[in-house]
Image 1 (cartoon, one colour):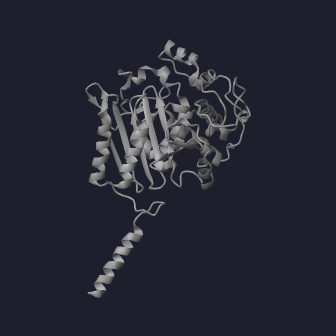
Image 2: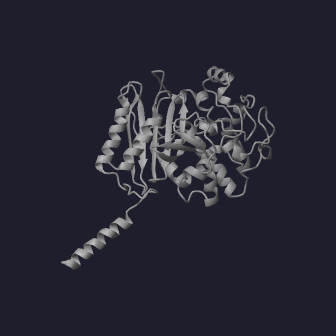
Length: 371
């Protein structure tokens, strides 16, 4: 009997030793239980009970790769949003543009501290001394072209217009501050980064997304409007309580370009986030640079720092990495939690009032607790 008891004790100790642990030494959930799945579903359905909310696509990937994907709420009047619907992911686009730049740097095709002037011609209101690193972490001082009222006029003048990157840079105003002085979020820098990537690789940015990111990672439910066709159903969006068919407003969509132009769903975005923040996607040195944070600009809920193409957040009393997205027709938040290895994404088919900064941390908390 004593021998059997000893063997049982050894067996239990082996199980405990092999159980995954987070950085705090606490065991974490590896497979979502039925209770966890139910709690996650309840959370997104409760979100839809708010009269100001419409549809939400949500995804949770655990450390071992186990996925939970679901959706709730309204796509169009009388129609339910599905996990396959494509929604404007907006500025999560920046994580992909930034990743292409970092990959080119790994291949020594460009340098992180190269000045803009090495790759692009002189342009009005663009300081040629700004570096690629300063573009990536928003310490460049460039005015945000989307703040220019003349751009709004141009959008309204022709809804079928497809803006080019060069045209968008033409709406950039006077600089806000000297490069390196502080952090201020700007879409301008990521349009410039897309232009630099095209110059270095001698290919359009949409082709670079496919060849360097989407193809290798098997991300099929994603596209850049104005430059390719949608690979799946595009969700009806809601703006000021009215239904909008996004692809009928091409001029609005294409102002995003390589800064905030992509459409996708929560499942695809979570898979991308998990890949980006893995130990193998970037070299150790480049990953360290990506995760070197400057002070946050202070205009994003939960944000505590800006890295290279990414943001640092602090939800649930600990650090996460990722990015949010906000546009007139879509809102999103993707966060990776290094303490647990969990990736969470929510994406909504509406702009203002979506509550994405509340819902994503709530799903992370549920997944972390495993109940």
